[in-house]
Image (tube, rainbow, N blue to C red; front, side, top):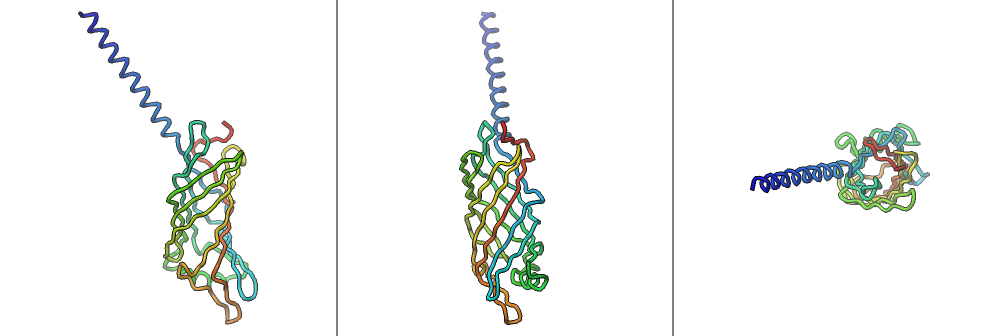
Length: 211
C-alpha cells in the first residue's frame, strides 16, 4: 500500500514538472512571437503636389515610427500587429522655401494640430523570397481630421536585422478640410497630394533574417 502511495506521489510530481516545463515553453514562444522595429534616421517621407505654375515637394526626415511584426517559430514575419507613424508638421520643408512652408503649415493647422499621425488597425503580410508585401489599414489624422486609409508597402531584407520599406499614397487634402494654399494670386496648389516614403526599419529585440 505504501509503495502504491509513493508511486502515485511520484506520478503527480512528474506530471507537475511536465506542466511547468510546458508552460515555460509556451511563455517563451509567446514572448518571442513578435518583434519591434523602429525607423532609422535615414528614413524620410516626401509629399508631392501640383500647382498652376509647377510641381512642388515637401520632405521630412523626422519620422517617429514603430512596427510590431508577428513571427512564426522559424522567426519569419507572418503578420503585422501594430504600426504607428508620427510626422511633426513643421519638420516638412519645401523646395519653394520658407514662404511655401509657412503657407503649408497654416493650411495644415500646425499650431492646433502639430502632428500627422497614422495608426494601423489591421495589417496583412505576404512574403516572396527576400521581399514582404504589406497592406496596412488604419486611421490617418491630418489637421485634426481622421479617415481610414489603406497603404501598400514593399519591404526588402537588407542585412541581418534591417528592412528597407517604400510605398506611396495619394490623398485629397480637402477630405481633411485642408484648403490648398495660394501664393500672391499667381500660384494655386492642387487638392491632391502623393505621400511617398522610404523607411529603414531595424529590429531591436533579436529578430534575425539569417536564421
